[in-house]
Image (tube, rainbow, N blue to C red; front, top):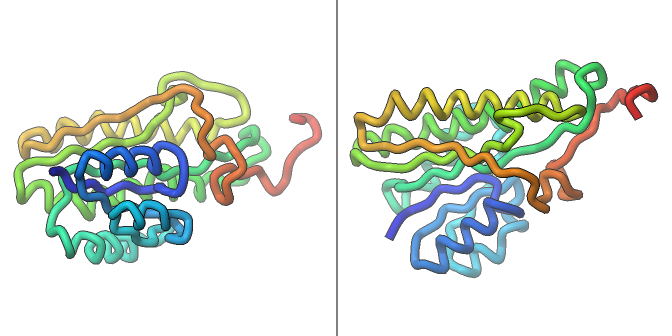
Length: 201
């Protein structure tokens, strides 16, 4: 029986992974900005907690520590949560670009830093990052989102080398197009620049 910590469980890969893990008898700590969005996971036995990856690192650390108390450890960390910004580089403000990086990159770093000491102590663990095929190619009007995925891929490859001596494996999953809410209509999942430009429409 494995203990999972999964971010971004309200929809898509996070939600489906949590259900699959629960179905095989594993324990799951499922997170979302709003726990009302993951009540079905709680009904299936998951421990659900509120976690927003745009929070300061100290607040993320506190939330992770509280969530881990019932189990004492985590075997698998799935850094899944993310948001998309649809807009050309010229349209997306620096503030908006930084906000995307706060969730898609820095938030994952904060969660990983919080859990790594526990994995090192137990000499085992798996850390998976949900990247994208855009982590090795490019596409117009998602430049800031794509940049976060390149950053995550680079982070994962380097972290793998840093922690392999502790029995910890690191992987990055780079899926193509799936009908998830990051490209859909879920609140917070897909964002658009406040100052769009007619030339790019």
